[in-house]
Amino acid sequence: MENNNLFGTVLRSLGFDVYPTGARVNGGIDGGGEKYGGWSHMVNIVTIGEQRYLVDVGFGGAAASPGPLLLKDGHEAVQIKPQTLRLRYTKIPDNTSSRLKLWLFEVRHAEEKTFLPCYCFNPDIEFLPADFKVMNHYTSTSRTSFFTYKLLVVKVFMGEDGEVGEMYIMSEVQVKKRAGGVAEDVMSCKSDEERVHALRKYFGIELSEIEQRAIEGMVSQIG
Image 1 (cartoon, rainbow, N blue to C red):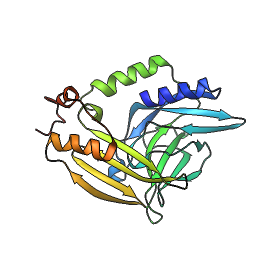
Image 2: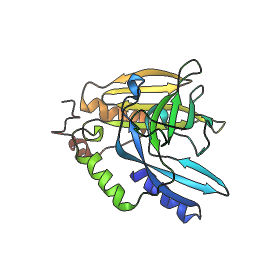
Image 3: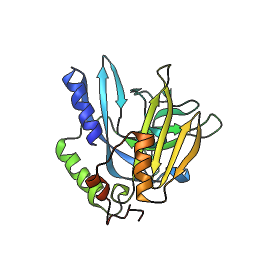
Image 4: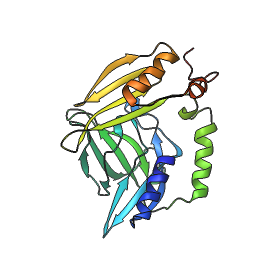
């Protein structure tokens, strides 16, 4: 939410017609299913002429969007080849009404694989700062929110052609490199010292002594 709020402010200051809205993240994506939680993610909607675009700089992992996506049912865009992103206007399994639809942001890791829904959103509702205050409180304090117990770092590298070339992802103790639709394990951290080294080597993040000790006593500490 902080990333998209900052980027939305930058776009607005440059004169773009932009407003934020909330999204429900699919907690069942790893298993290939759909299990949506409450509003826990922020996205920006930018309008240029008669067209609206989804702009999201806050959703990490293998589904990070490299640029704005045209808000059009069935629209596809390349992420890291052969990965593909797609927007669909459809129902979600949790809906009890047959009339209501939402927009789905989906990812497909290879052409022979199926699209996986990452989150759903309604671009016709502008969320207010008070809405995100409630959402931020939940995501940063609830024991069921992965932000309170899981360490996740993502860094995207652009290729010479201007497209996303490769991506490094640290999830808990594992560091992976994703390129060409293939994920490769590059390091498994066995101590917090090794994880600090990995942050420096693969993500360019330098932690001070005080920052390194901040993980002590947290559930994400390796020990």
